[in-house]
Amino acid sequence: MKVIIVGATGAIGGVILQHVLRRNDITQVIALTRRPLPNNNIPNKKVENVIIQDFGDLENVQDETWEKIQGADAMVWSMGTYDLNEDVNLKYPLTFQEDFAKRLLASSRKREGRRDKFRFILLSGAFVEPDQSRRLYFLWDQRRMKGVLQTKTIEFAEAHRDVWEALIIRPGGILFGGGTFLNKATECVFGRSLAIRGEELGAFVADLVVSGSQQPIIENSEMVERGRKLLHEAV
Ligand SMILES: NC(=O)c1ccc[n+]([C@@H]2O[C@H](COP(=O)([O-])OP(=O)(O)OC[C@H]3O[C@@H](n4cnc5c(N)ncnc54)[C@H](OP(=O)(O)O)[C@@H]3O)[C@@H](O)[C@H]2O)c1
Image 1: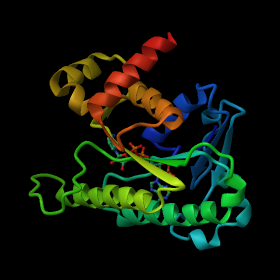
Image 2: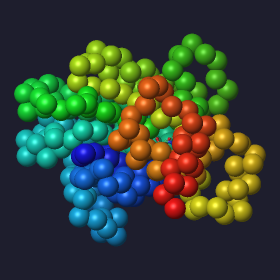
Image 3: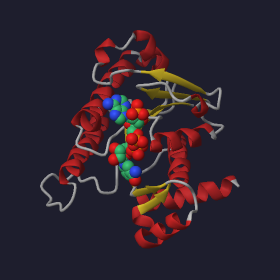
């Protein structure tokens, strides 16, 4: 299986990349970034780092670049910012889905014989709000904007259901650094529905890439449970 990780230079994308690389059933990984991955993040011959310098200018992306990524079976979109950047948090992922799906459809003959649809996994968040009329008391603009992305991503998959499926992951606060005292205390305070360790999220997403999900929207507690089980089984 071949998978693309968009935003692999980020904290969350980096963890997902590490866990995807541990899977034997994932044989090729494209880290799709706007700048080269640091060398120590490419520990594995399975990874190829493909650069798109400006995700706002996909028209000028070379055919050679599209050809490298087109043969993929799945993509994890983990690009994002913590501010109100509409380009990064809304426009880029939607435009990329449209352009990429168009190319998949154009090359559908090459995909004949493939078992599965293309699997698009969107990193969203537990506080992201798809309901645009709901009253929110903090970070309302960011949460609503990412809610629009969630809704449009699902609508896009429904409109292209022959070739495309979308899975939305909604983690709460992601805790990096393993079982530190602070992480354990945070887990106690926020519980399974609002906190997840980086390694749990990474193991879960790597498995989601391969196994998919019956439900298109996946909340934090399910990721914690499944991530822990996968980590336990891997020991
Ligand atoms: N931390 C949490 O608990 C949590 C939970 C749920 C959701 N989230 C969301 O997850 C997203 C990613 O978080 P993170 O902690 O991984 O952030 P991060 O470490 O800042 O990584 C962001 C990623 O997005 C890329 N990116 C940003 N602007 C870009 C642009 N204009 N063009 C191309 N790539 C761009 C970055 O590339 P460069 O390295 O080149 O800058 C990097 O790969 C955020 O939107 C955040 O709100 C976070």
